[in-house]
Every structure is written in structure tokens, then in C-alpha cells.
Image (cartoon, rainbow, N blue to C red; front, top):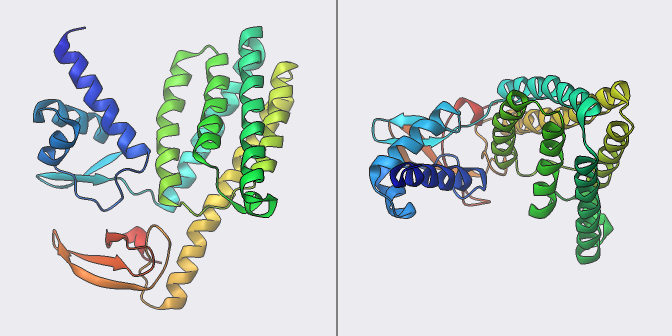
Length: 278
């Protein structure tokens, strides 16, 4: 690999990680010059990275000289989960057939680390808060790792690639609906049930377990979107903050011929889109 190719890949990975970690917010206007300065690179590898991330549906063009983070609608979220359910059922079927003892050990180690992280959270904040809280960053990383380990255990490289693309969209969705309620203990129990089915090579039980696990996740996401729509309807303005769903907002100038808003509760600036309306 040439040094130029190495630089292009480094810039792409750095920009993708910045998007998926929440460093950039939806509505932020990102330009080649701004990103090149931030990533300490020339505009050529930045332009190539932007092009790749647009193809992966993480960035979208706002104007000729800028891009923004893709905003996922309710319909898109449902489609994402429907695809994920189908692909992860295929993954657990393959895992039941092909998982190795080493991969079984890696899955079990992941679950033990996740349990330790949950206990640490409970000890730090108390059980009542931990039960009602979102995953902390460590737990969230372990969650993604658990599902990817299953995909790897299927030993199907095409399936792994497709699930990686879906995983990035799910990460983007989680950033968009930060307040989604998650019962970490229930998810942990579901992961253990799934692990035991795969370990016992019980494909039927594993398929049912992964389907129910992801259906619950999809239902939680749908409830968040619908709750935001109810708030918007009750408020009457039809506009809600995409971060905290507050309707205490004010107009904050215009950008690219679209109204810009400022949330009085969380301070988020955002451009009006259809997803912001009921």
C-alpha cells in the first residue's frame, strides 16, 4: 500500500469515527476546508473520504461546498431493523454451524466484561438510575462487539460486511435519539440466552432469540419517534429539537434558504427538516 493510499484510509477512518462518536452533530455544516484543518490533511483525501461516507449514507450533500450528517427518519429506522433482523438470523444460523471453541470463549468473555461494566455502573450511580439509563460508552462498545463476534462466527465475509454497514447506521440512529430508554439487565439476559443457544448449536432457539431481541429494540426506537411526534402535535408548532425533543425553541436565522433553530433547553442548533416535524 502506498503512502498516499495510507493517508486516504487514515483520513476516511478518522472522519467516520468522528461521525459515529457524535463529535459532529446533525445540522452541523461540514466543509472540505474545515475538515482538512481539523484532520491535518490536504483537501484531496478529505474529498475522497466524504465521497465514501456519502456512499455509505453517513453524510449527505447540503450544498455544493458542504455536507451534513444523515438524519434517519422513522421509516428508515424500521427498514434498517427489518434488514438487521433478517441478516442477524442468518448470522446466528451460520454461527451455530461453524463457531469454533475460541470464538465461543470470545463471546463468553464479552458477556462477562459487560456484566462487570453493569455492576460498575450500579455501584457508581445506584440500581434505580442504572436501570433507567442508557448504555455507557463501554457497555455500548461491548454490545456492538457481541453482535459482530456472532457475525464473524458465521464465517461468511459478505454477511459480516453487510452487517458492518447496518451497524454504522444503527450507531448513527442511536446518536440521533440519545434519550432512548434501555433496560441493560434485560438486554444482558437476552445476550446470555442467545449465547447459550449458539454454544449448544441450537439454531432454532438462536433464531428466535435474536429475532425477539432485535424486535424489542425496534419497538423502543418506534416509541421514541412517536413520542416526539405527540409532543410536536401538542405543542402546535410541529417543530421539535432532534436531540432532546424539546419544543422550547426559537428561530436562529436562515441557512441555505432553510430556517435555522436554537433549542432553549439543550442549546442545540439545527436546520428544520421533515424529521423535525410531527
